[in-house]
Length: 314
Image (cartoon, rainbow, N blue to C red):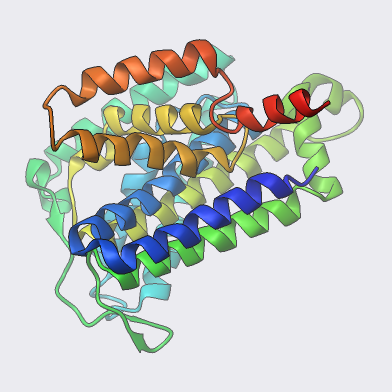
């Protein structure tokens, strides 16, 4: 069933970010642009967890792969942003496809442990492969004249990149909204709820789960490519286990069962952190308390407020 409310809230938030960025200054525009790229990461975890039924703790690894791919391929495509992002999407999808054949053979808890091992292993490999990743220093985005369908577009934490990110994210959310009303998506939901029953009805549950998990990787890869363009530098931190855990927190705060919850979670946590940093260094403690409150009194995240509201109206 299509979630008109969730789509409307998400699009309204993205429009508000663009309007806000026009008068908050360069620093906050950069913060908002990075937040938009992280929204793709949060959404990718929601897709993997809630629709492929895989508790993937390696989504940041896929996100980082998309980011590093953008760095590597930028000179080869002469700054063509379209080709650069296509390569990032492809990289994320391929890695997730390979992971899918491994984790879907495991139990639910086994998949979580397996993806944790993958996240740690890739982080260690990234630190060791200095020639490819720059090691602990990371890699800068090559200085090029970037263009989007022939139009010049400067890379960096600027308004143009914010518009680009929100444009892609809006298209993704609209696409999901459309697909969620189709029969194919109802099959995906049926498999997520009871894969064995769906398989007995003749559906290839494994193929559907692989497809959905691969799509989650493509979304993370796209976010990684945009992150490289916004930050103009990619460090190993972007593929770390800590970054994957952040994506889980963002999704949980926004509403882990809704694809529209991730963007809300990113804004709530990241903007709160940035604002609190002006007054205290104990940001992690405050955010931790906030997360405990959410877990206890709002287990379905911010999107769960919608259900409470409609129940009260009844």
